[in-house]
Length: 461
Image (cartoon, rainbow, N blue to C red; front, side, top):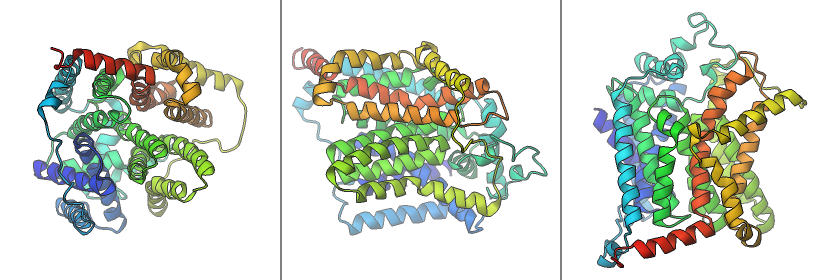
C-alpha cells in the first residue's frame, strides 16, 4: 500500500506540474512531482478534516485519486498530452559534449545522496523537535483520523499546548504528510523526508541549468548536498530542510518569471512559495521579497494584474489555515510584538548571531563566503549589466525580512539565544541553494565553466 500511495502522489504531482508548465525539462518535472504531490495531498487532507470527513486510508486515497483524474482530465481537455512524457533525444554529438567534471560531480551526487537516503529511512526518528511535535502529532492524527480534534491539541490533556511557541500554531503540511504515510502502513515517517530531499535534488539540478550550464548545475547541486547542516538535517524529521526544498525553487522560478516574462514560471513560483509557507510560517518572507521585486517590475511595465494574482495564490494556504484555526480553536498565545519599538541590545544580538552563522563553516560550509567573492569577481557586470542582480536582491530582502521578524518576537517562552540557535540557524537552509545558484550563474563564473566544459568534453579526448 505504501508503494501505491507514493506512486499516486508522485503521478498526481507530475500531472499538476505539467498543467502549470509544458516547457520544463524532464529533471524539473520529475523532481517537482513528489514535492507537488505531497503538498497537494496534505492540503486535501486538511479540507477533508474541515468538512468532518475522517482521515482514513480510504478517504485519503480517494481524494488522491480524484485529484489525479482531475489533473488528467485538464491535460486532455487542454491538448497537453503530447508533451507529457517527452524525454530529450540522446544524439551522438550530445554524448560527446559530456565533460569529465560533469561526470565526476554527478557520480558524487548519486553516491552521497544514496548514503543519505539510506541513513534517513534506516534510523528511526530520534530528534527532540520531531518526537515532541511533528512526528507524534502526525502519528496520532493517523490513529484518530483527525487533526482538528487531535488529543494532543486538547489543553486538558496536553498542558501547555496553547503556550507561546507551541506546535499547535505550526502550519500542518509536515504533520499531515506524516499522517498520510502512516495511514499507508509505514512504520517510520522519515520516508517523507527522504523522498522530498531526493526529488528536490533532481528538481534543483534541472532548474539550475536555467541559470548556469550543466557543469555548473552539477557543481551547485553537489555542494548544496554537501552543506554540513543540510546533509545532517535532511535525514531528520523536522520541518527545516522540507521548507528549504520548497522555498528555494519557489524563489528561483519567481526570478525566472520576472526576468523571462513567462507566466508559467509565475504559476510554478506561486505554487512552490505557497507550499513553502504551508510547511513553515516564516516562509512568508520569501513571498514578501518576490512580491516587492515583482511590484517594481509591475510599476515599470504598468501591469499589476499578474502581481496581485501571484500574491493571492501565494497566501491562499495561509488564509485556509487561519480559517481552520479560528473554527476549531487551534491557537497559541501570541509571540509577536505588533507595535514599532527600538531595542539596541536586541538588534545587535540578532545581527551578531547571524554574522557568526555566516562565518561558521561547520554549518553551511563556505556558502556565504561566496557572496563577497562573487561581488568582487562579477562586480562590473552587476553594475553595468545588472547580471544576476535580481536573485541577489531576493536573497538580501528575504534575509532582512526574517531578521525583522526575529526582532519583533517577544521571547517570553525561552531565551532569545536558544530560539536563535534552533530557529535562525535552520531557517538559513533556504539560502544555501540560492547563494550557490547565484554564484555559479554569475557571468564570470559561467564563462569559466563553459570554457572548462569545452576543454574537457569528450570531443577533445
